[in-house]
Image 1 (spheres, rainbow, N blue to C red):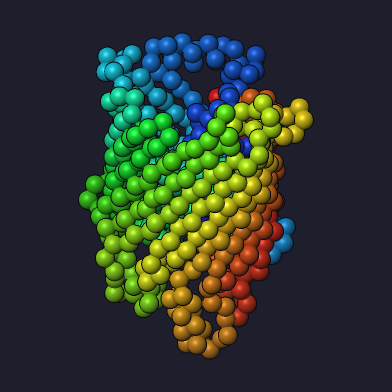
Image 2: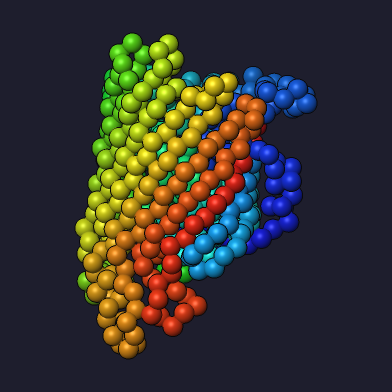
Length: 447
């Protein structure tokens, strides 16, 4: 989905963190997986400095994410690539620094380097790596949060929707980008929506109605770069394009949590949707149609459920399943229906309480209008070429904790119908890109 360039910094990063950890979600730099500064005596002085600043209201955190991935069979071509992401965050406690109770400032910057396989070697939209982006150093999120009581919190600034909405706790294990910010918003919204690596100006509110029921809602500027930009990431290369004049995007969801502890197996259900107020091409007339449709709405559901927990263990240990469904009208959405799901096992390996492994699958169903456009294009070219129908991906991985804050994650992925069954870019238009088998090794170090 996104492009990459090789960089010496990427190779150096992998040498430094080569047997590092793997971690799922991009911005989980506050994840409970621990920090190398806390678990490694060699970093004692850095830990002391970090903790001293935190006492004064300045909390620094970060991680380095490295990923080596290779196409073993199928796809556009065989071969491998390396990608890396360094993330640094600063959280400022407004009460300690300015005397504003309940206030905080969050700043997050990214350094992205390397090259992904998706466009060059696989051709899939369900990208196999969730840090794919143009190599650059950029500002990601920058917002002020105010908590008014124990129930209500409001954020204002440059925000990323994928950090809050459409999330499954169990799906965060998986490396494939679609298990985070799914293919539907990524393919259907302008510039893939306000998600890594392009956050957008907006406001977000979270209301904890009860201990079990939470409501979230947000409004964003509907684009992070000029709408006519052919390369949005290049047009907003440093993340400093603070736009406020584009049609807005509104997202809302409700979450109900149940079970856990003595109440039995834990679970959560989320229901939500997003509405973009811009104009969308009428797919019935082809992807580049001059006719448009006003607005675009998609609805979704997310379900997490623990199905087994050993006696005496906490809610984090055992076996869980997840499922997500996203639906939208086929006359303006390239992906009209999306489904993913999987099984995750945590803390079940003897002597390895922090290790996690799982299998998952994702399915993106393309609009029939794209198939009609492909048939028309094939007829005009006089070839019997492929037409888009669906893309599906399978992933299996194991996340092993080396020490708290350091994990290693081998991954296997199998992609069915890359690009939804599109013609091979190096062929004569008659054959589609073949299904691809991809292997990867992801590591992450948290600080």
